[in-house]
Structures are given as structure tokens and as C-alpha cells.
Length: 147
Image (cartoon, rainbow, N blue to C red; front, side, top):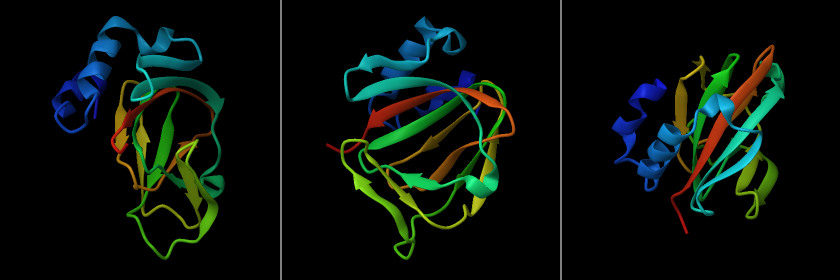
């Protein structure tokens, strides 16, 4: 969806109201790279500026505790998505500290983001971010859903 509509999703995730307040106070494009506290370890944002990778090098990742909101600030980005599949081969075992695991396979579909668009990935949903031919400027908001 577009950033202007993010408030419509506030009932879906605990902490999304806090994210909306944060985004009203801060322009995502003006945030310095790195972590930005919103509500401690329960809700925070990470500003990223990095070169994208080709689709063939994209890896599916999933999180167990946090939902991700990928908000594109500049450039263009495609993000792959797949349904969770117990048959997926694990490429990188779950790391509780990073709250991430990686899987083999190709995404079932691709979502293309433009500046000021966002995508939400719930815990357990495999997604393959950072696909682009250029530099991606984005904000990844992490919202804890599971303790």
C-alpha cells in the first residue's frame, strides 16, 4: 500500500499505532542509516541504504518473533514472497538473536515497491527483499508479535 494509508492497518499489529506516530514526527527520507528506537525492542526501525541484488541471488528469509514493514524511501525494490512450506530446505538455521532463518527455493510471487509504498510481512512469511538494479533506500520497521 501507500504510506498515506498505513494508519488503516493499525489494528493488525500491536505497536503499529506507535509506528504511525513515529512516521508523523520523522520524515523517513531524512533518517540516518541504522537503528531508530520507537518502543524499545518491541518496535523499532532500521534505515538502510544499499545496493540491490539480482533476482537470481535473492534468498527467502523469515522471522519468528517480528513482523516486518518494508517502506521504500528511494529507488525501486522488488520483494519476493512465498507461503510457508515445511518442505523448504533450510539454508541458514534459525538464529534467535537475529530472529531470522533462510530457505532455498524461489518466491511464488514478486511485489514491486515504489517510493512511499510499503509491504508488511508477518512472522513466518518467507520473503526475499533487496532485489533491484540500483541503490535501495528504505526503512524496515520491526514489530514484535511473539514474546
